[in-house]
Image (cartoon, rainbow, N blue to C red; front, side):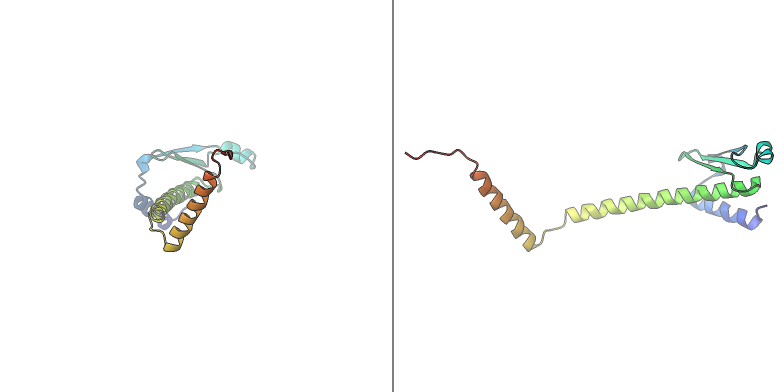
Length: 134
């Protein structure tokens, strides 16, 4: 059995993340794997789907349906937090990339770039037509 304290903690975490119970599709299904007669009779496996994001969680780690419900909600919160962290990281990386791209080059970099351009131009000049003497 899950304590009231743990239930309130997960409820607070879900509200902080903006997850409402009405956005969740919850089913109780029979589990799979080892367990024999007990697993074939009871529907303690919890299937949870968050409709706005499409995240699906299936939990049968415990024998109790209540504990599996709590674990499924906890896993859902963790996945949503992970998605948000990754999105924020991608956004930050894009900003940094844009900043680096528009950064002014140093004097040494400019001189090196111009030197390389001159060398390349000289190479291309040598590819011109060969004119015979005479």
